Amino acid sequence: MNTARTLATATRVLRQLSHDRRSLALLLLVPCVMLFLLRYVFDGDPRTFDSIGASLLGIFPLITMFLVTSIATLRERTSGTLERLLAMPLGKADIIAGYALAFGALAVVQSVLATALALWGLGLDINGSAWLLLLVALLDALLGTALGLFVSAFAASEFQAVQFMPAVIFPQLLLCGLFAARSSMQPVLEAVSNVLPMSYAVDGMNQIMIHPDVTADFVRDAGVVAGCALLVLTLGAATLRRRTR
Image (cartoon, rainbow, N blue to C red; front, side, top):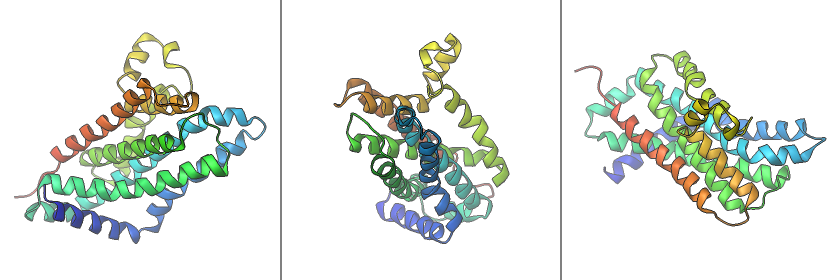
């Protein structure tokens, strides 16, 4: 992997995204708006917001990064940009790392905005460190980026890219422990939830809510989310190929 080529790819992607105001609004503002609405949905019982706010602080960035990354990368594929890049002396690792770096930079901004709003704007009460909360939110956003890059290889249109959300995101949302404790699920569903990365994202956020210090469980949860993101990025690199010769 060549650092200069990776940075050049990331710069190009960021330059293109800077002209797409709708995508930027979806990435940076929608998670904040959702958290704001959630806080005042439970205006009469702020403790409910405290109990699920941290989990959703991780889930919202994952979903929005997945959606925008999958569509933006698909545009690169269908417009022929990716085809031209692969014809240049660029390695697959340079391209996928450049995309990940560009969307990762946006994920940092998104996570900082959402975390700051939740903690200091909406009064989210946690026992752990705000930095750890930001770390997990960022890892979740990066996981959404990796998933979006990966599934874009299997969609032929933006509509198909959106259709992957029910297949990839919704099952994780239902089984992650947000609506019911995973230990109370049917054994088969609990076993499935144990291999889904969003489950560990929610568990990590819950550890921050409960414990003031870093626990072994938190390290495990954060490690699983980060490992899944790296694994999916590697799989995404494997899907990069020329379609013409």
